[in-house]
Amino acid sequence: IVVGLGGSATNDGGAGLLAALGATADGPLDRGPAGLEQVSAVDVMAARERLSGVELVVAADVETRLLGMFGASKMFGAQMGFSEEDILRVDRVLDGFVVAVCGRTPSERRLADSPSAGAAGGLGFALL
Image (cartoon, rainbow, N blue to C red):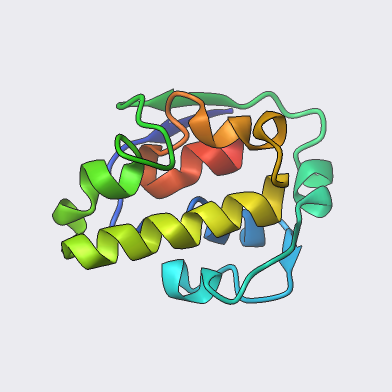
């Protein structure tokens, strides 16, 4: 399956997609960045099982990382109507989401630093 990633109206790190695929969490995954403020643990096993045996090809129009100075919030937040304060808050929330999904060590968090992890509001991260 080729998944085309382009512009988006939100930046939730792909949390909504993960929820649709069966991921569960201790807070809402389907309410955008505001909902992710309540999430500290995410179990993606059901989503992985659902996609088992499926080859996903991500076709993204950008190579933006998910977090940081050159991450999705900073690069595209203004296009989504985010203020500078919103950009910093959403990036902080997404950092917590990455920890909830991947863990705290650099090797576990490396997916967020992958090229295109920030594409389409972070869908790239969810599909990696």
